[in-house]
Image (tube, rainbow, N blue to C red):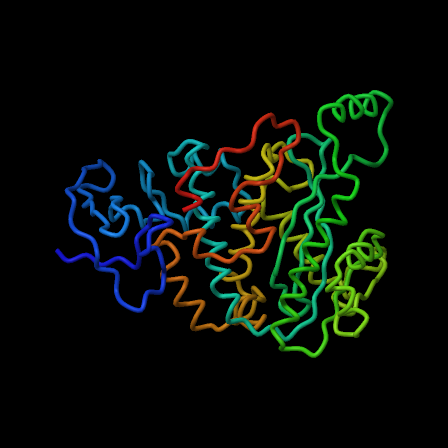
Length: 375
């Protein structure tokens, strides 16, 4: 049987390029190995670097010990199922479920990175922070969402751990002080997080579909400071190309509210992701895995769900200016080839999700990331 591969999977090899002018043919058969799940797997030797690889090297299930349906997993996750419930339904451990969610998350991030080069957004944006918690209610978070005002397409999501606020008993305040001796949230976390969101809004503006961009937010004091701290954003604001529009968070959350699209996303996440449901016993224990689940949910929302459930219509991505044909083409291929980080251009937020760079409160060591995830 003749085999063809797009490139050598070894980073550093001269054949490790996704778009070669000539087909990659400088390899030879190098035996095979047998697995219970995938049967006989052929191996090959690359003449360029001397490393071996197999057909499984290019598979989303590389190093996996069993097959799990990714679309079924995605649907269950986005329908308020916890990891334990998913595991019971498909007969897998919660570790296996988390592993497949991580793999699917990287596929989804790469999918969106490829398609973003072809988008032509013709809408203004709204941004706001979605608040939940991870590890403990003493470590609430603020997840900034950048959403298209017309399409409800989510352009970016960024994470910030914040200090617990609100009414507390004396014992709760003492507990917070004790925990802050171990981990204390950055007081400028929201400002820095929104600064990264502003960076993504500038990329939307650079698509040149609009002469200027309105960025709607509430009146959080960190937002203007974040724009002022970004030289590029500040210049564009002075030129009138980036217009920061602010509205009170106390305005009714109706469709007439300029923040309706991001308020709508808040509601959807709150009802669809089990760990964010109010007063649930299910909550995130790890920041990076929580953001992997959110990234996968946003992929489902952006590219697979209809813009309006009761209408026969397009997905949020198509309404936002993505090509329907390109989306359909990529959706057919997304689970067939493993996404490679070296071929994926990512912004700071998505890179932190892919590489698990965020710190979990009270975590003693950095999160483990398999070597194959950074290939």
